[in-house]
Image 1 (cartoon, rainbow, N blue to C red):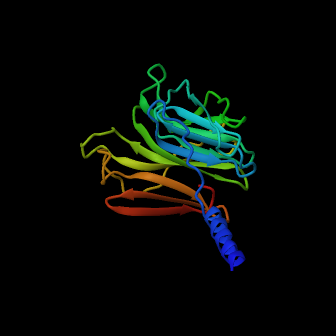
Image 2 (tube, helix red, strand yellow):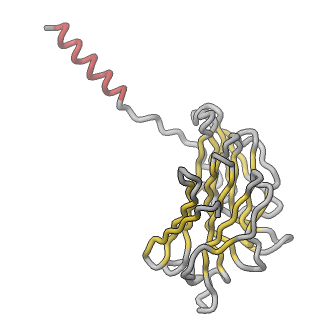
Length: 235
C-alpha cells in the first residue's frame, strides 16, 4: 500500500514538472522599452534577436537565458516601429522609421539595418519609400525562404495627422532581391485610400506573409474592416 502511494505521489510530481511553465526572463527595463519585436533563428534556435522602441536591440546566443543589449544608430535616424526578421542564411534585419534632420524629414522613409553576427553589430542601413516630405509609417516585413526575397508593407501619409480631405493614406509595398542591399520603387496595393488622422479611417497596420507557393498575402485595417490582398508574381 505504501509503495502504491509513493508511486502515485511520484507520478503526480513528475506530471507537474512536465506541464510547468518556462521561467519568465527579463530582457531589459532600460530606456523605456515598448512595442517589442523578437525573432528566433530557425537554423540555430539558440540565437535570438529582439528590438523595442525607440532604438533598443537585444541579442542572445543561449536560447534566451541571458541577453546583451545596445542602442541602434543610423545615418537616417532611428524612430521606432521596430520589426525584426531573419533570412534563410540566419542574418537578421531590423526595420524601423527614420528621423534624420540632415538627410530629410521626420519618418520620411523606412530603414533596414542588417546584422550577420547575431545582433552584435549592425550595418549603416538601406532605405525604401522616400517620397518628398510624405510620412512612411508602421512597416512590417516577411521573407520568402525559397529565394530570400524580402517583402515590406507600410502606410504612406500624404501629411501625417492632417484632417484635410485632400491628404490621403495608402498601403505601399516594396521588396529586396539582394538581401536588403537595394529596394524596389514602392507599389500602392490598396484601392480605397484613408485619411491621415491615424485613427479608424486611416489605412494602416499592413502585415505581409508568404504562402507555400511563394504567394504574398497582405492584410490591413480601414474603417473597422480588415482588407486582404495577394500577389502571385512576387509583388
